[in-house]
Length: 254
Image 1 (cartoon, rainbow, N blue to C red):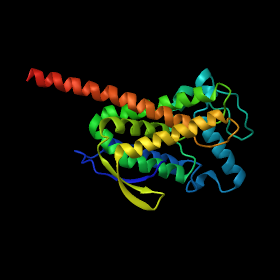
Image 2: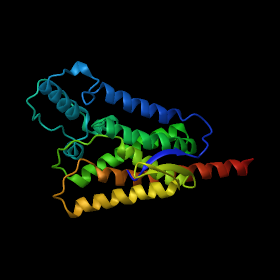
Image 3: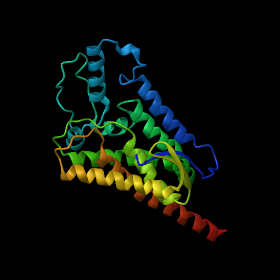
Image 4: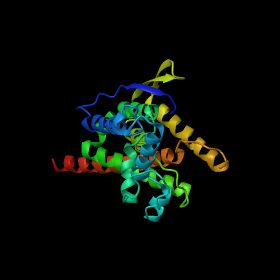
């Protein structure tokens, strides 16, 4: 991320229930998964835990090859418990609630906590929830297309959906100011659009760098971030324009 946001000065008109619910679900899913050390019921023995993680990801994470073909890949694991059925298109949704570690989860939830309430307030709760899910799924499929039909590395995380929230924020409330920790230690009050735009430029630069130098290895899905952000901008424009036009008609009637 481009910085660590702490707070946004936009005064929301009601409690951002959907944002808080999304955060709670993401945290809950992580704590109950074998990726969390708190989930002791998966066993403490390294091999058992490793198998639990592998099976968990194979079942719920989004695999590009499966998304693009619509077919579940043959089981290639020796772990007990394989052989489950999987609906690839559904994994584009479930993968949005999986995280590879506590830091991965924390970084995503911080951004959602700061920027989500504003976007939820401006779009409305139900539109915001649909917007979040659609951005996440769009980011997931865009990542799959960027990787190709032979890619089998699973995608996990809410980053694509949250990038969509940032894109929506740029459309609906770019005038707000956000207190941000620059370099992780210096608190600075910045225009919201500056932080969000910097985030996009950084993610795009890293994505293009990986495209130009395919030998570079990374565990971060920059393509999902970039396309999730673009989906958020487009979706934000469409939803906000529809609401504005509907509001104008009502004003004309009255």
